[in-house]
Image (cartoon, rainbow, N blue to C red):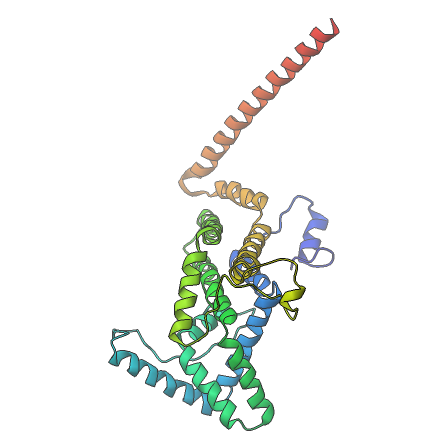
Length: 325
């Protein structure tokens, strides 16, 4: 569609050099989300292990049924200690969802379901480790279990839930037929502002939620003030003293948020947004009232700018004449 040389955009530009290519807003958001999901090794590894978890726990009817039974037991246990309440539509038995780049809501649904079904998922992985049909299957389940019960995986799991949740809400809103162009632009601007606010103020709440989740499921909470070791390097070979908190806050939290903001800004450029706002003035309702107001405002602003520019030019000419004399 938007290929620069041979696709539909190029064919239009060949005949008319003044056209703008404007992609579907909801699809652009999904593309921005997919680009962020592939940004950096930790996030790419997270989605790889998320896909492996779904494949191992829900790839057969037997495990699918075992997953549902484990969920029922967990719900009954929580109801017994009054950790959750019964109400219509709540505490439904679900299943894990696969992440697909072209399917709306798959990222958000997969992450949310894993958080809600974490205990049941770990139980199924333990069964596969002990009773898997092949050694490869048992080894894969053991590796996935170790990964998803690590602090880093849980941290990225909650971080991506927060970021993707904001994007997914906007995607659902943009797909409603009742929205017009101005509402869509307003929603995009709101999403950018919410993402920026989350980057600025969301760290403390995110860390608290992750630590509470780890305590609930007996996952080790690292000492955030301890020294962080890069990759496979020994601590003695590192020149910089970087704490574990600094690693998670700067190398993961900030980078993911910045990547999301950059993708949103790149895919929703200001010049295209301005063009859409102006095009909305061509709405024929109420005898083109929007057109009249916008044109009047635009002419008024242009008149003021032209007046200021003329005064500036006159002033510069006067100064030049004084210098020459």
